[in-house]
Image (cartoon, rainbow, N blue to C red):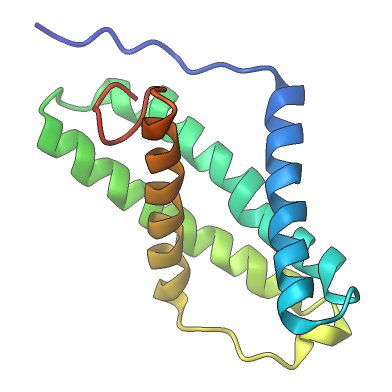
Length: 144
């Protein structure tokens, strides 16, 4: 029996408010860490790549890639992690280009290209762990 994959949909306003909220909180944590409010808006803009951009990576997997795959759980998992990795690398390039726009971050040396992919996978695993805790469809239970 094949699972009936339903397209994932949510109001754009909900996506926008959640992803901007995440970016603002992480930006605030960066400002607290560096003990200067000057970092907050820059860190929030940079974090938008992973929060807002990452939403679209996940949506692309759920609505475009997953329905075309074998329904075998191992194939679904491997492909999803690969999409997260490649998506993270692409979003990481956006982060590096954005950092070059701000004098405060221009001098920072970016990490290796693959680090953004690994970081994005870790971020998605934590996000799906929170969904699991809230008993929402998630990566771990196989229903999302």
